[in-house]
Amino acid sequence: MLRKTRTSKGGPFKHARTENHHIIRVGRSVKASRCWKVNLKRRGKYMYEYFWDEAYGGKEKALKAAKAWRDSLMGAVSGVDYTIWRRNRMHKGNKSGVVGVGRYIARDKSAKRPVWQAFWHTADGVRQSCKFSVLRYGEKHAKQLACKARRKAMEEVRHELVRRRIVYGS
Image (cartoon, rainbow, N blue to C red; front, side, top):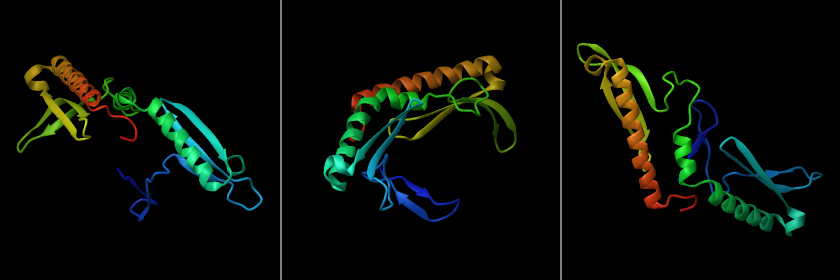
């Protein structure tokens, strides 16, 4: 899937992700040594490797080696477990203490009512949610129901990802 990035807020698209994703060119000046650098970050750990043109017999051969190294590394560190880990990590703005669960005010046509809401993304990347009314279930029970719904949904997502054998490059 191509993911386009913007040059600035509201500006035109700069580029789309290509087959050289995670690979950059280093040493663009005439005097500098030239190489390809593969950059990856998984679970907070940086992984990188340089592929020098001189060592591989040219720019194209070095790029081919860099892609091969990146693909082998991605296959090792980017599987179902990593996908689930990314979906379950705690973000800075989380105030509920539970990933994917928050307390919100639902606005109906005539009233505002407090709810606990669980969010998750399906295996296809579609965002899903379910709400539990604080007025109906009480504060504590509504939160418990939202947490249980998220846990169950994430378990189903994990099973679906395993069934589909979702890995990098497939």
